[in-house]
Picture 1 (cartoon, rainbow, N blue to C red):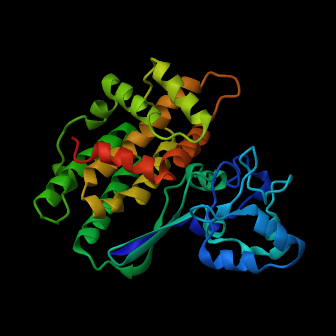
Picture 2: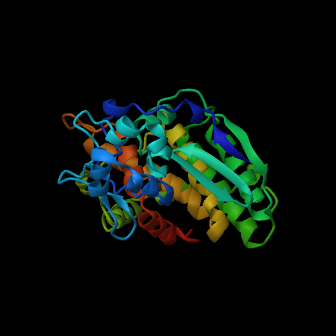
Length: 330
């Protein structure tokens, strides 16, 4: 099989100063070697400003002010490097964000990350099922080819709007466990959808003791934004366990997580763990939503999903900590 790219990928355009969660605030933005050479060679007053605004400690990166703002982000929330030097002068991270790319088994896949407000709107606000287009070369790895086929079947399950979203979550978990059994025995043939075990795996993952464990686990991870800590604390104190997933938001969210993370099983062979991670991610967001829904100026489900993405998906340490906890855990 070939890699995929979602149909919304080419629609993304940065909304600049209109963004409420600016990606130039609260992040340490590393600078790639080619861009660094360009910045260091810049002359004049702006060249001096570039030299002063770049830290060479560890990996070269842009300095931030006391509010965590990149020093090149002006008061209109626009980039002075872009204004003074043009779009081509942006470093790789600033050019690519929120795009992500994943290479494995000879394929290359690309998508958008929901940490970005506008990307989140494109992905999670849409009502029609997302379409994935073939992209790049064919897979040269048997395991990756198997994972791509498994993922196609999971997409098919998750986009079946004739059944409830909770059923779709449960079927995806059951199918993932069956695919894991096949991988464990080196039988890389696609499982039949109608042969899945009749077991409520979603109920197990969302049980009160599991909820308590995972909310505490996420609080012990590295937290970058105090709002995230507060969200987790509120969810831990909330007794409501509403698991209403009947908005198309949850279909799009789960599809997004599966597209982005399932092929990472090519590294640790933990298919079931990756699907559990995708469902768990939705549960964490749902549990937080339960806790804040009735607050004045409450965060929306999209706000929470974006914050989750920034704290977990964009922290390799946090992401792998969750994956390790789920490793071959049934």
